[in-house]
Image (cartoon, rainbow, N blue to C red; front, side, top):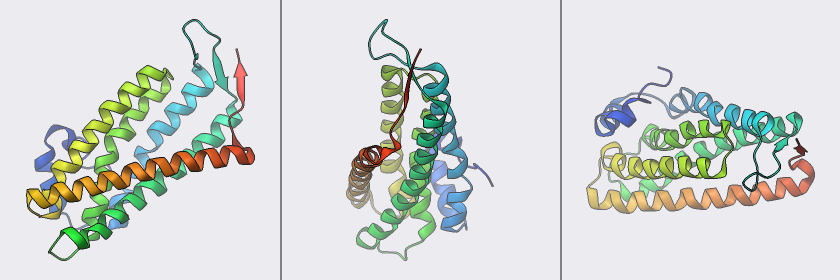
Length: 203
């Protein structure tokens, strides 16, 4: 079912992780029923924010926007990067399961952890409609903190491993996520230097 468990992961995460573990769903199905739709939220909101609303670097400063064409290209690239990032994150979780889990690896579980733990960040992308640096930073900080909580809380339930081992597994997963984030930033700089950078429009 499309976007099932999305609300439950916020209202009762323990119960929802247990329900997700029992589901007989493929890795691809878990990904396709959630990620393409959820990633549209930050994509559309940031497009609107940077091309229609604009932002200022200082209080009372000049309002700056991106041209519609530039914003479209960057948002499409970001959409693709998010899809790839969440898929690769799920693959890493499954790969590391060989080290931390004693039971047979179920690829659905690793992808589910990737999908649902990044859901708060995707939903927080709605803040992009109002491109205030502080507002967006606060939204992403809260979303990131809840994502970390979901990983630590969901790991022992979803992977069926003891709390102590789950803590080490979760910490490794979060480290991978941080490395992927840094890699994405570096890739962004490379893409910009290749001529796909933003085109600013002063108002």
